[in-house]
Length: 122
Image (cartoon, rainbow, N blue to C red; front, side, top):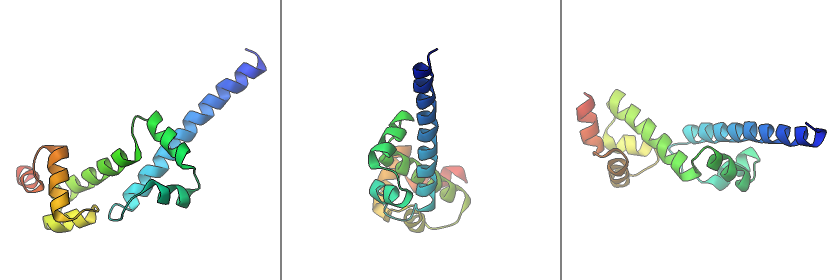
């Protein structure tokens, strides 16, 4: 392998590692801010990435910003519904939604309302 080929292979590996670091940073940022309005521009400004870098990294991992936010909110909502006695409206607020928005989105994603989900897990 020539030195030019070696440099190209190294660059690809480094890029993949960077993509994983960016995805992990995005996931941590989302988890730490679930109750807030989560937009990619705030994340890139806070972490010093370009929006395109983040989009490429998430695409590499077969996801995007909106999907990651939604997935993390649903994971946290399931945990709260299963393990806390918080009212549904409070759970909605804790994951960044109002009550009606949360019920609609949760049902679309999980196939049942938050109330039904909670009852089936008790």
